[in-house]
Image 1 (cartoon, rainbow, N blue to C red):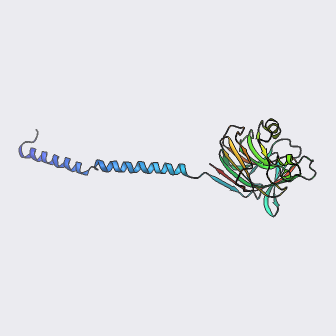
Image 2 (cartoon, rainbow, N blue to C red):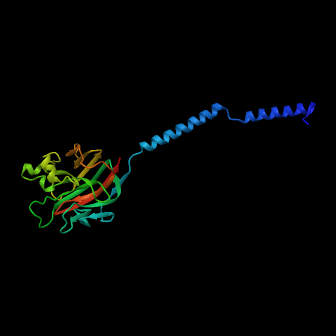
Length: 257
């Protein structure tokens, strides 16, 4: 039977006190709202901080041949002009694109800096120029890459046309220097002051279909390419050298944007 009289009144009183006590223990709505907003702001701030963080950076002294994947070249540790470096020469009989892919860094857009020196090999033909440069957006299967390189012996040649061919852009496959020079004379190569076998600082900046080559810390690029031939994609970096060349490389820095 349900309680009656005094017992019923006591039960109702206890229930009222219990309910009141329960309500008093709840967090006020305004406090919950403020805490929720604080959490959301913290999350948004953290997300913005992550997006604003600088790009990944790699540096390589290039004092030995370790960490290089060789493609058509032979690598060895060397000292050139008093500086430790990696020396590359094309394998005998190799008739392709010679380079040493640097294991680790990959970038689509960003910058590449390094010191290079090049000279014709002993006994090279008259057409040897000491070709040396850097490949970028290099596919792991070696199917494609972009490249800037210099021809050191052209920089101070007593022939203005030859001087005008001191720097060069090429793209593999499909766009060797011969094709680019024939179809668009002067567009993918330019003059810059160079000395044979002397350390030369080069910097390449890449963004989308555009790339620029800077030489010896000049404030302005020596060569600008506004229509890179390959589809923009992340890829590796390679130390590039041409035929009949003894090439040296040191102090590589790669920054991916």
